[in-house]
Length: 349
Image (cartoon, rainbow, N blue to C red; front, side, top):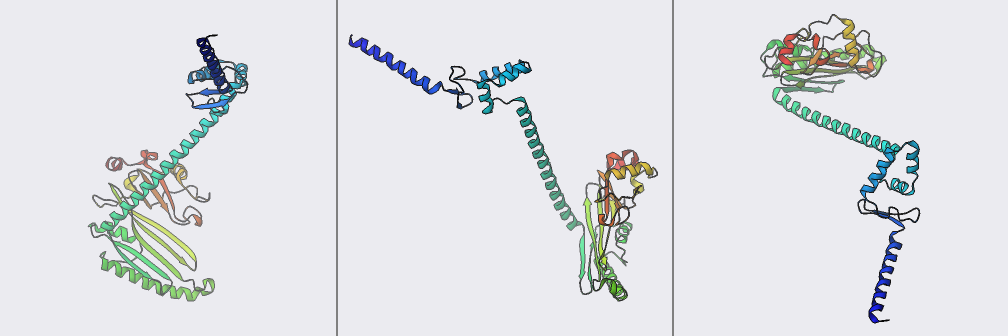
């Protein structure tokens, strides 16, 4: 045998050995460059040693076009089972489960983003309101804890020229004023505090056996509650106690920031006579801790509004249990548009 023939024979043997090694290394596995995966076969076979995206698509198409029994048979094929184990093919039930899970995650994430945006908007709105209040009104503040506890914060509105509007605002407090300057406000606070102290001494002497030395507590505050392009709302907030029995009260005055005219309920609503319909509307939007809400719910004379809604305010015990405190019922204008006066809609909405 010539040297050339020996070389050829050696070359053939080398190639056969190389192919054998390749088969030994590859044949027991399924290989895919498209999916970047390698996994062992269930049985030694030449089928799908190398598979592509197109092969998987054909299996899925064959499955989708098959009847129920054929689908069950396809799902039991070794290669298909391996694809399902690797998550390359997902059965319909698992696919639906994953889809529902992903939808749920997306929904929760969407709601979370909305809630975070809502909180951020509220923070921005609060900062803007605080900045507006600092420029719009000056605080007159008195605190006294020598006998019981007393605090009173009033606001001086030096920019408001309408005396009737000022009277409406300060009348909410129940204090008596000679004028609405800082000096006049401070004098009214001190006069009220003196009368309260005298009343407290008499009250404690008369009712000591019922509440010991708990005393009286009065916290009065005027606040710039809200503002927008049309309205400013001033809030009267009262919290007090007599012998440990708490009292709460909120009142509001909303006025047109451009002409300083107080917004009355009669300026907003055409009619409040349909008590059945109004009761339905108010009950739809009332939020309380308990179900013991008065039926029917009357329309409150105390309210505030903006360009989106009107909020009716009910004092403690007025329509609900004492545990609910002061109740606020906010009704969107879109719900009661037919009850709104045309002039109000035309001017503000």
